Image (spheres, each protein chain N blue to C red):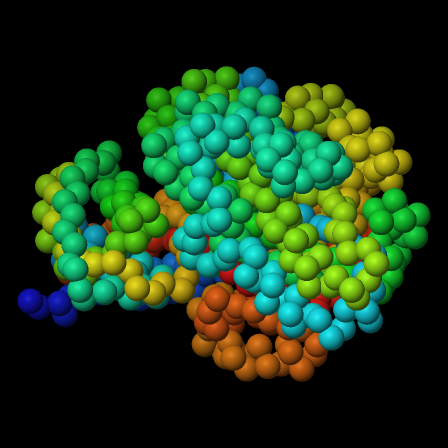
Length: 483
Length: 137
């Protein structure tokens, strides 16, 4: 287990695990956190898993650890690692089973005060409109041809079917689709699981929240994003559903053979990988992109359902009930990007697992209106606590491979949460604080209690303190719909 | 049947679910892993319309057999709404022949996304086999 004494302080918000800590480390680990969070972080195996990730062949720079990090499987949740092209590796376990799990934020001009008597109805309508729960299918049933279009076109497919606008896809990471999706590398099982689940939320920590813009910190950036203090927003958190889970499952299994073939020694079998330029690596990359596109389309369809529910419920209470898209970002993804690493510009595969992209101002891949301010970074809080909208900075490019945190990050095990928190009581407490709750299961709600997570404000303070993000706005939840 | 030397229990894991499983041999280890996984998912199976499934698989090693068997059950739960409570398993080396009996799932409140290889190692002792399985949730 990595101990506090193994860490070297590199600044008020930066720490390093040097390569001397373990003989198989190819690069150091860089951690963004204040001292208090750091103590919480060393409470589980997250840093051990970050050290394991430094053993991936072709890894360059540092393995990065965000302040919301916690123990995962193989690679920590809240970790970022870049591997060099062409022969560095790609690792499905360093991206996660829920490929392109991410967050979409929609904002409105509807004042909370105007909607106050309708929040309960809004929560019920959203709950009914956006299918959620374990294994649930949705209103859309795709055939194989539809699924192939989804895999190739992502959010563009959803837009072409009437589920969104040009502005939606423009304000989505990568324009809502990754080029190079390979339908032929998908298993029969992945296709079978993908067909019925388009436009569904799923279960676990996935949610839809109605939030109020509580405080604005950067008025210029907030104006560009269309935020008005006191107005309602809708945040959607979900991913590629059973389709992505199956893609990752298939490749983690087949890569067990690839690591033998390419003689890659690893400290954990969940980190199995293949060279990016190998047939195995290329097949996974193509399948991962298909799953990423599925997730972009899924959030686009859910956004459409949410818009319908929002307009239907609030009609008559406000003259304009439109929800415009602020941004959509992935937090489980492998992307080919260019970064300056150790003074050298190079193309790398950036694995982000429980971490978002956070490009600074000037990046061409951003929609024109966001280029001067930097990429929006959406940081959902734990249920019932604030969420944050940040933007990436020049320093996030320099120090963090253009990356940032993705949420509050768990600190309590699900088992402990179930033991110490009663779901029905939690629901009453949240409702007493003005947060309407719709949840598929009370034990499931207890597992996601705010007490099971780190303080999201402390996480945001760490990334802002480290200079890898800037605050734009804080959002306060008024309704939570849990899968 | 004497089940005193086989079992499973949930252990602490920050974000996901972890199960410790033990049994005198691979067949009981797989059965306990399956029962433990269904418990974590809070699966309830209908007693009506009993369903049977045969599963045959071969893996490169015993750990992969555990993951592959549980993957199979997860897939059947999601794609066909089936879960099982009677297991007749025969394991030779790393080859499994399974006869499963169960029914349609009437309730399940938790989602398991995947079975992982994280830290998965089957240890042997005088009493049999023991391992831990981490599930992504």
